[in-house]
Image (cartoon, rainbow, N blue to C red; front, side):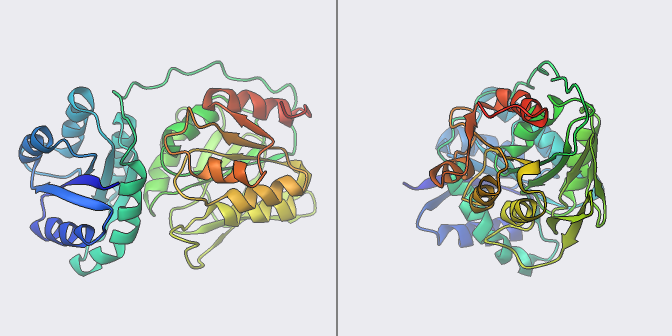
Length: 342
């Protein structure tokens, strides 16, 4: 099936390059491009595209205001394609709160735009058949209680829809939750803003991971958007290392890289969770964790924005439990206390 897309960006060069490149993909039809939200609104009404790409810094009306109005009156899957600035990172997180599904970094140099296209095309096709409703912030569920501190390691991987899913899981964990390492597919720079927003909402400490950080109870480390995150162990102490290696598939950081090192260094002392996301990143790594004796959880189809990564993990036999998003935090707490899956 062909996915129909509208491109919204104030740069004529960006609109032209993306339109021409995406149009060469047989699975994508570019139904229009708009320099500002007012033109975009008319195209949305006329063409009813499946997906919209959106820059956040535009004339006449800023992209965030436009996104809120779209999600209220004509909701559809939105991929934010934004230039990376400190303020841009915060705006991107606001956009995800408002209902955008993905954030991608727009290169500053026009000649680099072509490097963005393969991943953008894949994401457009992945979200093109998603039904999007009005974005209502999830009410915080009861925070689970952990009766004692443990030295388990919780490893979580997520992609499309993962920002909201991770917030649901992490805000459900207590302040003495297992030391947690997270890979969320997200561009460099945006992960710092993401970690900052989570830190304000979670009982645990949340930060963007730095090389050598200790993995300890009550601490959540988010992989930077341009580095692979690895778990290592020295005696009884777990640490993370950042690795500037090649992309694995389209991804850097890659969930598989993290999960494989967790399987090696933590084994049955880990808990693995794979959340919503396109593709199959993390499935093989979760299977290695499972085979090493770690209890593992996959998000179910009904609550996944894109049932790609969890589906692949389940198909490999990597998941001990398949749970709705809202039940995952409670399951992690039970496992951290030594309970059995299920």
